[in-house]
Image (cartoon, one colour):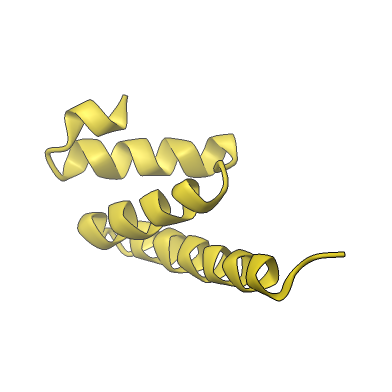
Length: 67
């Protein structure tokens, strides 16, 4: 059984992922990087989302974090 905290964290991750993907589509690279990074810290991103995180990192001058 999931704890209330674990469910809350997954809900937070889901929200962060959705916000990050929306920011990416809207070319808001800084917001996309921040939200996708936070979602990745909560649980590993899927390959497509990880590619978007990497691209956002490169577009915001965070090359070392985009590799």
